[in-house]
Image (cartoon, rainbow, N blue to C red; front, side, top):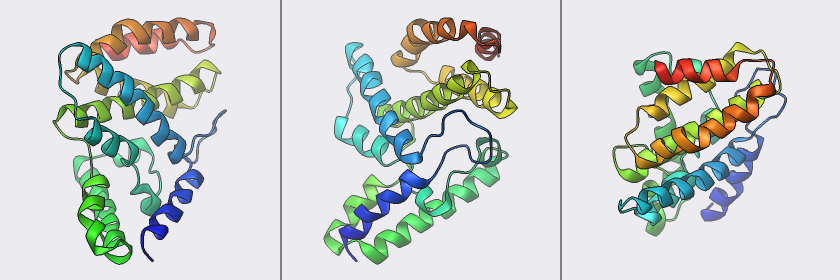
Length: 209
């Protein structure tokens, strides 16, 4: 019981593999994904601040480091499945939030419950921090898919992942999105030019859609 149970539960995130059921050259755990999202978000937030935007860094670290904690209870559901319909996505989110809430009720000491409810909530919203989380989360999806495409993985799901994540990113109105599209993505595409898969074509089609 107590916070020890929460700390111990974090080990489960190391055993949950993202994009299950598909051939992958490199497997990524939810724990590794969460760490990378924090790293992306730090730089994205720095870009926002360099453009005069105020960032709540405490909130940013809370929402980015804990954004996938609920997957301890439901696992990582394939992207095409969980985004099949808004209704299904809403149902999955409701289940996840309910199980996180139950975990807090059962295991977290009373004086810390409000803190855990704030930290483990769904962090993607219309705030600067919530939008940065959304971009960082999709950026890791781009990088995971890119790595597979670069190595010649012909699983169609990785093309879908790469394309859908780019479309989502370009639709978010942040300075860091412009920086990513203009300064980071071209380097990525250039690096992938030797792949047997035409990553440049997939990228251009996604950005044009």
